[in-house]
Length: 169
Image 1 (cartoon, helix red, strand yellow):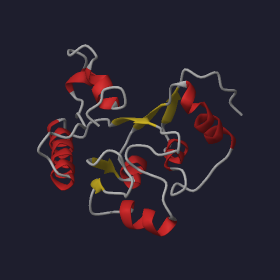
Image 2 (image 1 turned 30 degrees about the vertical axis):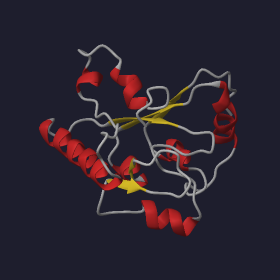
Image 3 (image 1 turned 135 degrees about the vertical axis):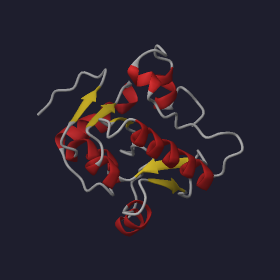
Image 4 (image 1 turned 90 degrees about the horizontal axis):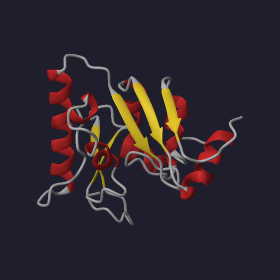
């Protein structure tokens, strides 16, 4: 999204430009003339270049979570469609074109990327509207094709930040 209210990378970009995070952030904002494929390719190239330049850096990823349990452009889908869309071993960043999406330029990392390449994963789940999904994540488990936010529980080094008063089990 080009809207800073819902795009986590635009929110992080407002940080002090001299911080390490701000200097090494990849802005996941589509350029005006980009189509879905060129957007995904550009983000993948920026990610590869950043990793190469930093010589095997510690990769920290921040994920927002939608009320439906989607995260990082990874949406709940029937198992076969989810596998066809996201279970790519040949690409780390994929274009996501799903009928009904309100944002037409989605590039997503794959679940494989999150589980195998990310060193630390931070879930950023804030706002009253996210309380139900947060409680559900704590109280039960689902397959990732039903609730991709389960990746926060499956990745070995993850932490969730929230402004909600939730009792952990």
